[in-house]
Image (spheres, rainbow, N blue to C red):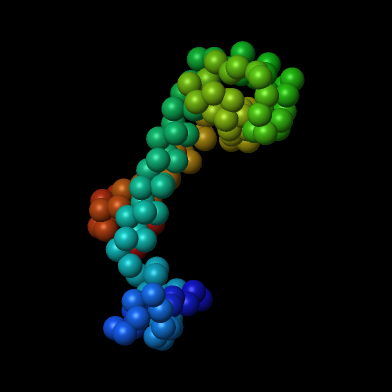
Length: 134
């Protein structure tokens, strides 16, 4: 748990600060906070959009991207001079190669759908799309 310290100025000397008391932030309160839901929802929506762009771009440029990923491997994430034809660059080429070529294939678009549904539900605070049976 995180502790937050409040500081107040003393009326006599504005240069000095005295320590008041510690406020305890509980995890349950943090998880129920609306701002946490909005931030998490927007991150899920952003991830969904970026993965969708990377996967779609990989479908058209897979030959060039696959060649670069096979040559450099995980070093693409660290940084190389290699230029990928993917719209999201080397990160998009690496992620889409991993998800589409090595893992799930075209079903990787379901990951985008999952992040989109979770993001919409968290951001708007209502069950816009259902992702589980009641």
